[in-house]
Image 1 (cartoon, rainbow, N blue to C red):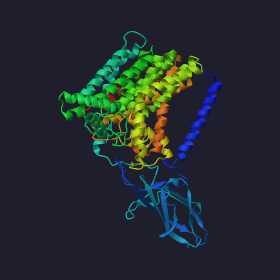
Image 2: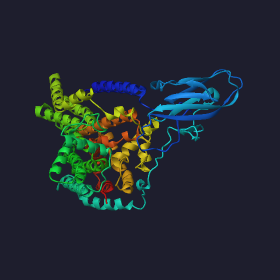
Image 3: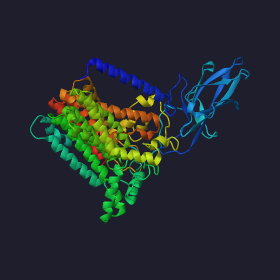
Image 4: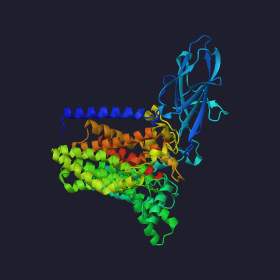
Length: 634
């Protein structure tokens, strides 16, 4: 194992690398992070939050304020930063133009009011133009006591003026009443259901060290419940419910009709890795041969994501048995939280490649956890081939699963250190896993290279030149604030990164298509989810400081590291692509077993007391029943 000095050196290297990476990221002109400069705030026009994609290549906003210039003055310097081009007029006469080069917008410019300007009141106008994004302004002049603030006026057409709005101010989306949660009339329902459910599983918590295998029975109960949910909702959930469902259908039907893959740039979702679409296309052709109507087939294609969600539930159970082999109570918490986390429930009911990618990612996670629990497996060539093949299949499902390389690498590195392998052993392990994963998936990258000249084609990478969505920028406040989700989990998830991740993981999805979900219950679920989410945080802390049992400590640290990797990737794309729909916890669906494991570890300390164990069981059951019923269409 590594010495403390080696760990300290490694930590210092990683910290330095992180600092350099963050500095380079923030210097990138594509990263629109708007920071106030003292009293000078970033301003925008007061417009309603539009949930649709916008395709206007240029947006212009005019900001105006009255300024008082002293009668005797030298040249006055205005410090101005704009997103992205700004032209400044004083009483209709231009005094500054930042120029057409928009990539340098982060530089603070100096606009000069000449010494010859007469003293008195003047009108200052700043015309800001941005490409595929909102027009924003920050301006200050200490000499005049001037700073951009909500006292300024703003207009997008030059005719209708409203007070400007600070970039930090919350947007208020215009939404229909169908999606507005009404809590008081229904909040008693989940507590009643949770109480009965809690009584049913109480014995399992009470007999957690022997007797009946309640964890296995609970797993089967949840799988039966999953099947009931699938049968009930299959034809009730509208076809357009979900993210980009029409484009996913287009991909599936293209493969089914042509028996070949489309060019990655031929359609909105055609850049996606093909495994899910090939499986769904095969199912589609089979159903056509059986004489099933084409419209019914579109609904039945949900069998693949629903089966993927059940696989995640099953893997959560296996992960609980692996990490907590002698604790059936912790196994039960793992399978309930990991299997019924709302992002698994709602994503599995819509046509998308995300559930299958999550299922394969969860399998990769299980293999990584097994490598940590049983480090001697790293000596087995068959085991390394299995790990490499799972990684390759994950890449064929969704290219974002490349993130799993980090947890797998960490798990194998731990196993190699534990086995005290020499350099040859390290090279052998890395070589086998890399060779097998590339043998499984490299044909896709070669095909992309031949057809479009690049190994990876990501639609998001070209989005900034084709379309944009609100807000179109980020502020530091969006990176640390949290809590708006509890007032409206359906729409205030857009207020900050953490509101978005919390809502889409524990409560409701971002609105997309015709949503049949029970939003009042979803609002209740957002509050009840404080229990398992707080337990997850406690599990992370306990594993970090080493207060968990020795057998489960390293697997829980791997689960924490996995969550950190995916959250870091989400923050990166949150900054690089400043639109509201990019911060979705569903991108981390494969980490659902991690949530279950960490929640179980967080609850571990209270389960030794009989009464606390009973209360914990009731609370978890209440949350689980509420989450389940939120996505059970009546």
